[in-house]
Length: 256
Ligand code: HPA
Image (cartoon, helix red, strand yellow):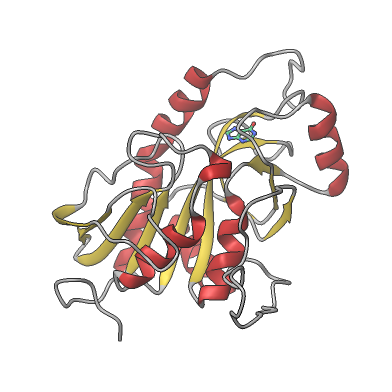
């Protein structure tokens, strides 16, 4: 079994998205600042104890939110967590809601995704001479981890929408109403900027990977007032109000 720097296995790695820059309940925290074969991750990996388990945490955009979605070194982030000893990753993604079942404040666990991003390094086989991988990606999230997550949410008494399609956009700007209307026609329920290439790279690295999406706003034109602008204050307030629920789910997941 792979182990963390102090020799103990990591039970779960958590990647925090916009508004989630630390895990408040993580105790006995050890900081790992490590270069990976893919370069520098967005920040340090914080390894500690939560609900009696070893947990690794990494802020996807950096702890001061200094890295925009298209500049994140997704390969280094996942490799750093794997190097620390993680085998399964819970991705927290802040998203906009497109489908009626995903209003601001809701939590969702998507089971599909569509990648609208471009120009990002999206594979481990980028460098000449690396073995070309064609991983199966029909089910982009690990079914067993999704089931465990949903079961944990049920035990914790926290509603989480089961399933749905995550559309990954380039950002950092938000979408136009026409882009969201097209995404709705494509079958997207949620929109975020970081779901890909992260999920695909996790599959290439052999990591179990599931997404817990925090709906922070209605996507452009998708809410009851289609002319309402999306503000960062609204996004951060909805993420903050979800943190307690997310934490209860994580603790239930770790308690198994
Ligand atoms: N679109 C894309 N990414 C997001 C959104 C959105 O509306 N809200 C939070 N992250």
